[in-house]
Amino acid sequence: MIKAEFTKALTIALREDTYLKLKELTDEEITSMAHWVRHAIYAALEREEEESRSNETEKSHQDLF
Image 1: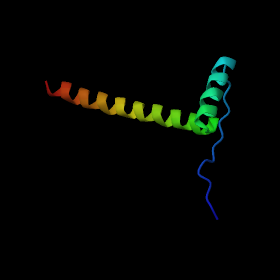
Image 2: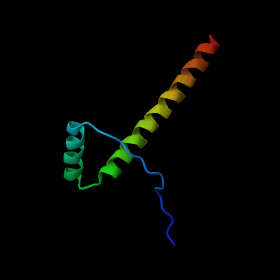
Image 3: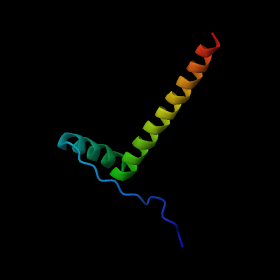
Image 4: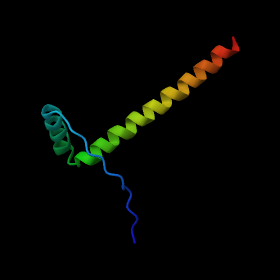
């Protein structure tokens, strides 16, 4: 039996122009909107984590002086 990878649903409301742009992009890439949004979320979380690590490193360097 295959275990489901994605088990938590998320419903969001978008402005019509945002939805149409997302639809255009996903149609061009031949991918689902869900896949595109998941990828965008993962990328944003990765940037947040990198910024957090950078800030911690910066703070530790400041503490040395």
